[in-house]
Image 1 (cartoon, one colour):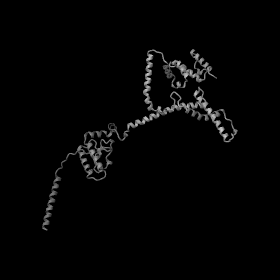
Image 2 (spheres, rainbow, N blue to C red):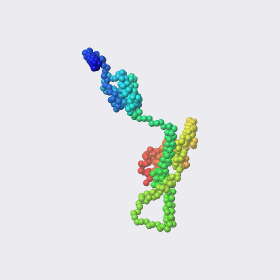
Image 3 (cartoon, rainbow, N blue to C red):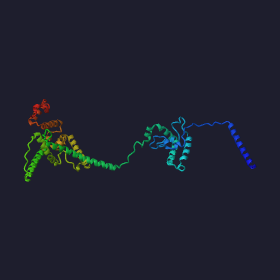
Image 4 (cartoon, helix red, strand yellow):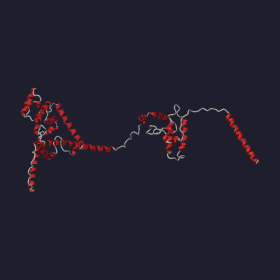
Length: 402
């Protein structure tokens, strides 16, 4: 009992001394320590979620990606005003957050990613140049785009093999030249078929060739009708009597005949492989690769010919037969030259159509022929034009045929 009382007294003495010390400390005046500017900083729990890390336009991950470097370390850009966080405050926040989210200490899901983001934010904000750039681009996404571009807006397509692209384009070019020649041939063929079926005159666009095709088609049509009658008689079929009804008009008869003639004329025209003047069915020679092989030859031949022609003109020599023919062909055009007979070509060469006035007179002559004017009428028109009072033959009623 005596020992316990002694212990209690000792305890009371200690408590008394401690209380007296505390009173003394309360009585002593407090020293005010200088405080650093207060920066609004989120606690660790609020900055632990990436949803609170704000946002920033950084598609190329030059800084902290889509997050705000300040928000990652717990600082709010909107509230610190004129007192941004110091390097010491940034370091202090980084150490606390890095210890909290270090993968060796925090096994939570996403801890490693948060730790990497925190380290990246600390790296940017402790680098004076990077921090200035980060602050500058905060409200200037257009200037960020000009300097760093944006992988968000577009991405480059994978590179294609240039040889494959070149080969595909070359094949397409060959197909284009082939079908261009086919289209050229079809235009003349369709025109010729229509002229033969509808029996166009020269004025309407017909030609001796379309007339010949029509005559052949009519002969074939008559032959087919005779064969049909003979086949019916051989089978014992009696020809049916014509049923009474309205008679066909001349226009309806002509239309019926044209329907029967069209397939025959089309077959006859398609048997013609070459209409002349380059209007022919396409062959392998129309492929671009074949033309490219021939281009040097044609170019060299043309250059050589025109060089000789120029030298002869400088020497003031008379035109030879070859030069006259080439100049005439160039003047009237390849189509008109190919459509002319040998006699007509010889006549054209003698007319010296490479001279402009002669060419105009020749073309007027051809127009009058297509109009169906007789030789006498054409002579009258020429005389009147030479006198300067003929006018345009196309509008002179006295010179037209009835």
